[in-house]
Amino acid sequence: MTLTTTGLLLEATGISKTYGAVVALKCASLAVRPGEVHALMGANGAGKSTLVKILTGAVRPDGGTIAVHGRPRTVHSPAEARRSGLVSIYQEPALVPDLDIRSNLRLTETPLEPFRHWLHELGLEDLDLSSIARRVPLASLRIIDLARALAIEPDVLMLDEMTAALPANLTERVLEVIGRQRGGDRSVIFISHRMIEIAAVCDRATVLREGETVGVVDVTEGSEERIVELMLGEGVVDMPTAAERRAAAARASGATARLTARDLSSGTKLSDVSFDLYPGEVLGVVALEGQGQDELFDILAGSQRPSGGELLVDGAPVSFHHPADAIRAGLVYVPADRAEALLMQRSVRENIALPFTARIRRWGLINAGDEHRKVDRAIATLQIDTRAHGEVRRLSGGNQQKVTIARWVAGGVRTMLCFDPTRGIDIRTKNQIYVLLRDLAEAGAAVLFYTSELKEVQLVCDRAIVIFGGRVVAEIGAANADEAALLHAAYNLRSGALMPEQIVAEATAVEAAVVVPADPPAARPTGPEADR
Image (cartoon, rainbow, N blue to C red):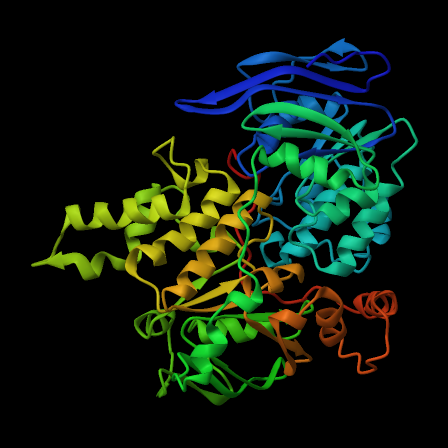
């Protein structure tokens, strides 16, 4: 497509990049005007992160041109890009984990007072600058990265999935700050899979598909359908309706619950949680940030001991001392953060085969033929893009998440625990995961599915339990589990007369009280993510 340089702050034309056999970008173009918030949209693997890394000097392009203020620029490093006014917040915090925050600021020559100002604007004014980065919660690290970038007043600020790991209250602050950048001399490039965020802050959207720019759309009412159409390039598979699912029949027939929780407790975080999960169903879990869902899944996955209550698998009591105990009992875990589950430096095949190699050994030797058949079947089932045939870190985020699921599909699944598995994943990949979970249920598996996107409940689940304050406060069948009903229950609002807009108003007030945990578990590795 032809783009004019008239009045543009940033223009990238014909950008290409390959990694061996993998074409990350074919012919990507992007034109950003002064004072606009410009969305960069596309499925996982479309080339968004690669384009951002090229613009900020973290990756060298194979071809194409970049112009800033109408002048051609060749950017060889992030430091050089910063001097040109181009700054990016990558998908993972770019802080040295073993240094304190103050030392990290010195490394990037960040002015302290503007940094403190932006911390205050973003709701993190109480941050202790002597804190070691690895001990700071992930959400706080994301805010620190943003405040650090804003403090140097870049001409173009690029945010790659900035809000994906943030709780609702911090997301709202970030969107407010982004919105205030509109109309001046500076611009923001905003990458998000959440259409509601794109609609809230963006003026235009450039859409990439398979490494090419396929359209530029003005973000107005009704533009979402056009954006999705450009992203997908093909139709989305229809999901079965709640009425077409058979889990209710399985329960009615007297089937034994695959997984039963009775009065599960975990200190002050979880209190007397009880539910039954049956073969052939997907049971949703809905909760606001920090309501006990993390502890529930940690207990079920064997990484945390409950302080009270009991678990039963197929009607028999179980006690887990280690995640391996849960796996042996047939409970497998898919986390939201794929970095927690994968060996990023190892191949797709090794990652998928890892959990079940012990089952295909004879006299200490792995049956290679059996392993290859199982892995190939799982790759085909999840449609994992393995053109690189190399390290998992080279895959797109969506394909990485599919690998975390494929490792359990390859070995056979009885009960799958999915904790927000579609977070930060594009629409096409989400749909593939929805279909897979339904197929697993149809084949007799049981799925426990926590989601932070309420609309997913009716797409995937047969019913949902809602947790508030560490307790189950509601159970809702899929047919009635629309966003208004789930939001009402998630905030424990008891007046049935409330209209959806009133629910949202009250919910917003409660959201402001949601805080990031002060003492998280060990921090994840930090630094710019590998090429997507």
